[in-house]
Image (cartoon, rainbow, N blue to C red; front, side, top):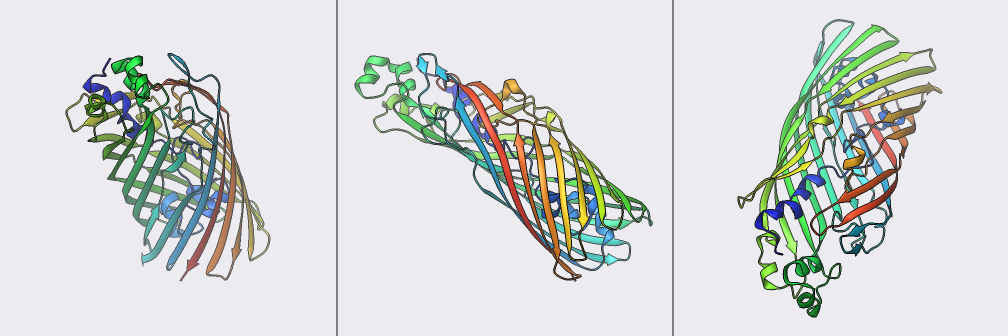
Length: 446
């Protein structure tokens, strides 16, 4: 039978929300931490307490008071997630889903960051940073078994973050800033027009024109963008010259994405189906609150050679209870339950000063996933992971340095059992995932 007008909400635009969680195997949910190569080398341990260069603008703006004059830092991270699916009996109501395992859904992503800081007076400094705090890209083979649930997901963010830091006294510094964040998303999936035709006109009629289930696929692409605004606060405590502690808070940022749903239909599709509002291009919007976070960090010099650090991060992912999509044509809202969980991330790191030019770094971390096992999707095959990281700093001079960091993320295997009614079938299988990250940074003082 023909799907009613309101079933657009089940077949197209809810994908806009799925896109917003496409960075599935990099950090818990779809957050990115790669704002500094030095921080990566310690698995981001002590991020709110390190304050070694201008990247502290992101991790803790109060850390700017540990510096004087002008600073510049530029960081670039190459991130290579891998997510390989193993089909375990995916099916439709009439038989198995056809297609392969989709290849490696991961691919290289480039994440840049820029920072600049300067004095205002003896007790106040200004800084500005440009970062990419959320995003990643996943892409499956066009003919994979889960093509009716996901093909390509692409999310990009740019966060512009000016800050001020103030020295309260020799023990305490504070800082804060605002964020203007741009988000741009694109998503696609296949549509089984063979099954749609059979459901509308019957197998005999559709078979005669070559439209049978899983033989005549189309495609829908959904895109959207928005600007959102938030703020960040930080404090740094220095009880001794060889010890410091930091605490930071980054606020939620609310986005209302305004987007388009565009359809590619196979040639020969019966006119009644081709003209159906269900498969007609339209405008839509969806709201998303990116989560606030809290970090607690500590840093201690054990002796002139060794230092250790730790970090505890909390992310308020439980805000993401559902995705609600609203339509320009007056169709009922689409509501997709998510019910994500708040997450914790704990990391430990150590630095070794080999000599005046070389510093070696290492770190480990345990990072929780916000995704519930029973609500996992092919766009978010996320799972808990363990970080193992290494890095080094080489001082070119007293005013400049190069940092290199590398991390490997061991991601737990993730099972999936996800249905996409009425014609998407049930995707059943397991994911084998990991992530490799390489970062390079140049820092300069003036």
